[in-house]
Each structure stands twice: as structure tokens, then as C-alpha cells.
Length: 144
Image (cartoon, rainbow, N blue to C red; front, side, top):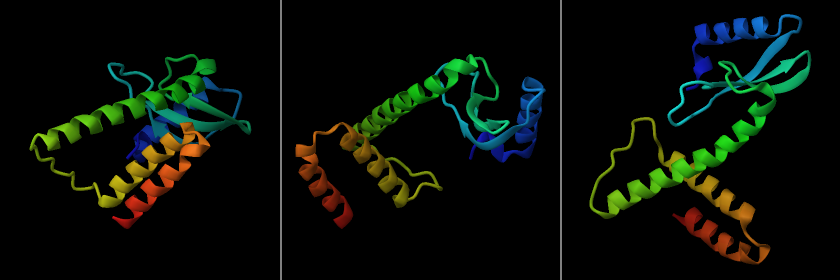
């Protein structure tokens, strides 16, 4: 669920864009949430077109527009780090005998997608000579 699932939030975003770009015709193509640790601003992101030109922006902007795209890209590294640290803590908790209840909307397919994403991250940085190991790992995952 993203911020734009609420019609009033989406309409308010459209109003903000019309105010910010009064002489243009902004159109929201898609939206996304921006997660920050210890920061409450810039939480609503959007891909828009401004008179046909694509832009990534924060609807509730405090970051300068020229820096926003680079900042959003940098957030991905932070998201991956936070996910990795949280997964490691949960795994260690399980190893120590703790049990973790799954949320009602989490499925085994979600686990698979997380793992596939982690494998893709590893492949991006892996020398080609090491890809054979990745193929073996992928077969093991597939066979489970």
C-alpha cells in the first residue's frame, strides 16, 4: 500500500503539483513511498511528466529538485542495508530458539522474491567466473 492508495492524498498531490508548476501540465504516472530513518519529510515520491518531460519528485518536497533523483537512487542502498541487517537479526533470533510469526499478508512467494532479489544483487557484482556457483545455488532454491 502506498500513499496514493488514498484518493484524498492523490488529489492533494495533484493540487500541490498544479501550485508548484502553474504554467505547465503535470501528470502523475506512478507513486512510491520514500522510507527515511529519523526524518519525516520527503515521504511521498512520484514519477510525473511535466509537459511530456519525465521527472522524479518528492510531492512533500524539502530536497532540491535537481538532487532528488540522485537521493532516491542512494536510498536503495540504504533500503538494502536495512533489509539485510533486519534479516540477519531475525535469523540469529531463530537460531537462538526464537519464533517469528508471519504477518497475515506475507506468503512463501514473498520469501522467494526477497531471495531472488538478494541473488540478483550478488550477481551484479560477481565476476563471470563465479557464476557457476550462482547457478548451483539457483538450482538448490528451485528444488526446494
